[in-house]
Image (cartoon, rainbow, N blue to C red):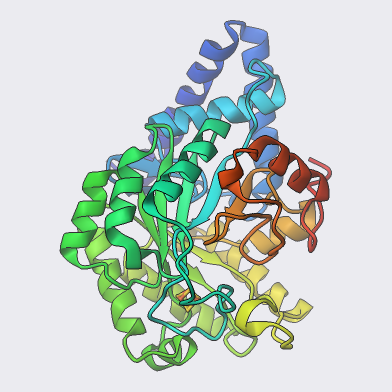
Length: 381
Ligand code: SF4
């Protein structure tokens, strides 16, 4: 079967699944049609960057993007139900929260130049395993399709991660956001056995020396690249996360990075802009308009040009934040820090209370009405 035909059949399959879910939700052809149409209109607005459908395959699932669960899966079905519910409501108790970035430790063996956890790094470990479980259960009760475990370096608590992942509901996907530390073949397989969906590896340069310099460690590149190999061998989903400095942002560097990511067999590259928080606080490091333009051009080209069909999909949240406002701050995602405090995202750190207080509904309500301090609330969608 040609690759083109295969892509078309996967597209058809995904549309059929979505239509079937809508019919089951509404039991009314008109409402189902209207709602599915609403999803496609919303995605079209959002996907200026992704006109060519690309599908990444891992562990018997197909992924359109990293932030939507792969299909077929219970998490994908529930995600589509949540999306439909936003268009024509059939479940008034649905809170439409899709993702939590959950810091499980402030410990880390690295000293990255851009570390947002810098002020807490390697201080007191605040949360016990029991407390982590309680937070996770609170979040899942509120409704959630994806948890991204972060830190510090989350793999410092590999045993606790195994436990946490094994306790998630079948409708929740789990990803680990890591530097690659401690992803031995044995640890990677035990995480997969516990139910892990995928790993987001922080890799800030295609060049070993430059990445190590940014991470202040001569091991960092080796950890990341051997972790990538072990993750792919375990058939887990793999994404890379790039935090590009102004100096890095040339077409040549981005192109080199893309080819390196393809060699590592990553499905996605997420580009996260440096922000003046944590170790970068009070430093003039944020990107200027000309740097943003370079990222946008690169993203458009890779996601829409047929010559890049077999390359990773690029995710650039900065575009959507500038164009539509921020989907964080409890709207679709939020951040729980290593003390258990609720924040808008890892970069906008302002506590809206501790999740262990069992007051999540009103805490998220306050966070939502405040919105993202940098990009504002979502508008015009
Ligand atoms: S950015 Fe992440 S990996 Fe780097 S020092 Fe901070 S917590 Fe560790």
